[in-house]
Length: 255
Image (cartoon, rainbow, N blue to C red; front, side, top):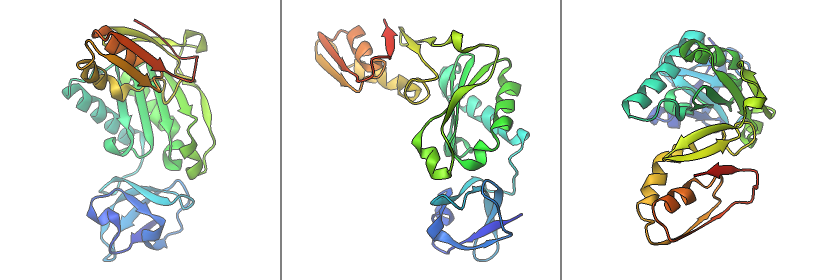
């Protein structure tokens, strides 16, 4: 397997999972952009497997500390482990950030779940080229679900990728969108194809309640409110006045 040798003081030798272009001592085996490569230290010891992109400032992103290929079994194992972790943390399994990039061993892969809708981002070249494997892994694990691509973020340009949005898989058509979700007793209509991020800031769900605990009897200003989740949570908690400011008039919510 082709790969790179990192310099003695590279961050990856101290626990970081990225290798920057300035930290490469030498490249061996002529790897192509998007390939899986071996990472080695100056003593020829294997320090992991990574996805490679010579055109990015981050030339290698480690996804395993062993020799490992990116096959269907690997994706299924990582996604299943991510789902199990969230279940153990008592995070609502059908309304959550399911996969978060390096935190779940899949650099550049974001998956948010809204019931039977899964919103996918592949923000690195190596993962984007294996998008079909990721889709198959999700279907094998969760059954007949709809998978939506939200690869419309500018960070993809750094990997040499274009911007795309659309329905990748599923029996539900665009006419089934937006979807309705209930968070903290509040109903939101979420446009998974056009709303900010992957449709909603699911990673902020617990913070709505935390902020609302301080809202009773107070005046609240919620800037950049998006669907108004914080504003509505504060109003529900007894705030005397709530103002939400958002430049995008297309976002919708209702209590």
